[in-house]
Amino acid sequence: MMPSVSGKTADLAWIRALYEFGHTAAHGADPLRVRQDILNHIVQGFDAESGSIALIVDGTEDQLEIAAGTDLPPGVVGSKLQRGVGVFGHVVATRQPLLINGTAAEAGLPLRVTVPRDRPAHSAMCWPLIVQEQIIGALAVNRAASRERYTVEDLDRGQALASLLALVIANHRMNIERDNQIVELSSLNETLQRVNAMLEDTQGQLIQSDKLASIGQMAAGIAHEINNPIGFVTSNLGSLESYLKTLFGLLAAYIEADKTAPTPLTESLARARTLRKGHDFDFLRGDIVALLGESRDGLVRVKRIVQDLKDFSRSGAEEAWEMANLNAVLESTLNIARNEVKHKASIETRFGELPKVECLPSRLGQVFLNLLVNAAQAIGADGKITLSTGVESSDVWIRVEDTGCGISEENLTRVFDPFFTTKPVGQGTGLGLSVSYSIVAKHGGQIEVASEVGRGTRFTVRLPIRHTPAEALQTLVAEA
Image 1 (cartoon, rainbow, N blue to C red):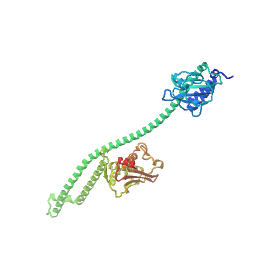
Image 2 (spheres, rainbow, N blue to C red):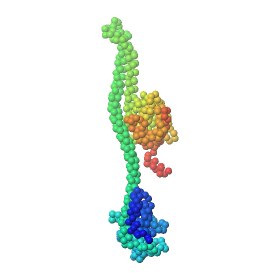
Image 3 (cartoon, rainbow, N blue to C red):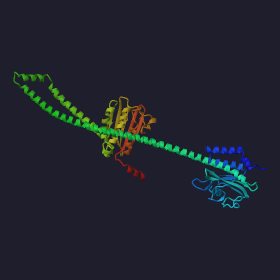
Image 4 (cartoon, rainbow, N blue to C red):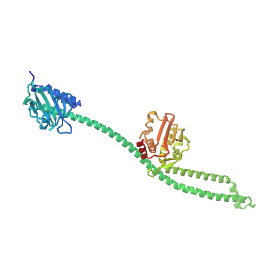
């Protein structure tokens, strides 16, 4: 004799097994597998031959999709059902359980086209799956006509199990949504971290740019103030030279007159002759002329340094692309950096004949200054820095080579990264080469580095002779 339906569905072991299926579903198991296992368990509990679960498609109100089934033709699971038709359609529309003993037609339900079966009329029960008054689908179990038919009592007992199944499916969906949200949040967090890192890099460059602009403005102001005393000192030297010429002319006339002075000498002439013989006026005259010449040369050098400093510190707003002699830009930059370099290394220049290059001279001066200062800092003492220039095809190249400590291979690919530095904390921002790379890229050029630990480093800057604006470059790329 077949066991009663109520006996199986009321069995604690059977209910516990159903709970464990729900627990498995809550821990992220495959939803198709979980639904099929639960359905198989319910079909066995109701002593049925087959069963199926239909769930409402997300984003719709009544479109159903077969989510699990037994004794179904291949390909039916995952297929959509015709809206409002058949047992499932009726239960979802009425939100009421349904008992059918006979065919759907005999029950007065709308027919739907299915794969023909040779199975005779059957007994079936179908329950709506409702969670918090929201219907999410329906569950059905079936018996063949040869078996004992289900009763209203069976239908009522199954409603509680249907409610439990609805909770399991809803919880599983929530877990899947939660896992998806975790993945999305993780991806969003990674994106935010990348964006934050980019913002930090940009902020650092802006801070460095602002510092450079402030230093540039201050340097330009100082240079302007220095120019004023240089101007009047130079003017005074010219006047002093003119006055000395007059005095030396008078002294020469006196010496000439003293040669033919009558004797005995008057007291004043005798005192003057004694004073003249007590000093080497010929030496003094020659040395004063030399001192004036050296002072004038020194002032010219100071004026040139100040002018180089003013050129270097021009603000970006005042910059314009111009044709410039990069050898002169290098000389000007070297003039500024000489104090940083002279105590550590000798400097050798090997300048080739360069055509004028369309560029932003003060920006390239910043690049050359960074390379020179880095070279000096890489040298402990008694080193050598070699500056070379040349032409290659439609480009010019500028090379700064030192005999310093060199850069290790693992760091060589990172030297242009913002904030990367091998210097001790507090001795470098890690932005010098990054900014230099950006400036060279803005000119449409390239900056290359080669190094060997213990032997030195070589930076080579390659620049096109004629600057191509970014808009024109984009057009060339699009046409390529």
